[in-house]
Image 1 (tube, rainbow, N blue to C red):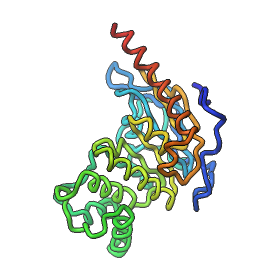
Image 2 (image 1 turned 90 degrees about the vertical axis):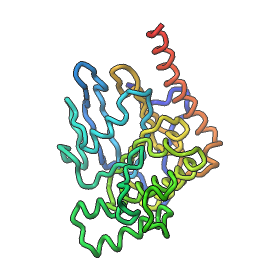
Image 3 (image 1 turned 90 degrees about the horizontal axis):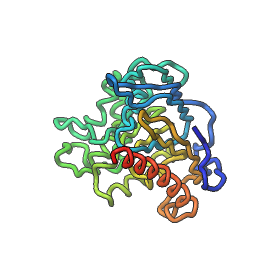
Image 4 (image 1 turned 60 degrees about the vertical axis):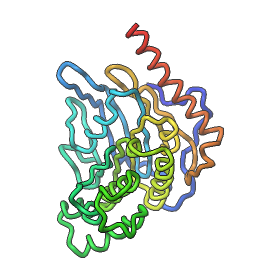
Length: 281
């Protein structure tokens, strides 16, 4: 496994001077020699990954390489067949407080209002009524849904539903946020808006984040590092330091560094596609 970006320039720390976003060496999540198999099919193996505090790590790879499965293992929803996951130094044996996940298809309860969807995690944790009444409106406002507290999911656009899902994940104030292709089910314009909204929210409260996506542009824009999964079973082929400071804006998309990293990730994944076509042929 290599950890340089090949033809990309020498990497910087990937961090700017945004308040509260100073570099931290504290490891929030550590996956050691992770392997998952379903019967005779091994999805991934030999996964070694550390996610530091206040770091966004994007994960890309071909369909079926285990990106979502890896997130579910870190969330405690799926067990590794071998290897370990630790969060803040504690072995993971199931869902753990301090870890939240935002799903691809919103995951909202259709019979609950926006307010009650956002409050769900806090109620599940047994938070007192006063804390819920203070916290829920704050995060509804943070994601831009103030005024829609009494609305139900069917009354919201896809982008608004995903905002509600994000507010629910943030309301429990996690130290680790897992994002499973959160913007893939919405239109391109809304997707771009939400990318920068998420970065804005992260800059206000920087935490450890793992961001799974099929979009190379999105992976590079969001991530401080990009993890490329390849092979069958998949392994970490390369970890690329993006080297673009925060805060990030639309101007980031036109920087030489962005295009260099994007091109390098594209080349890595195209090699996988070409190899797969040759095997089929």
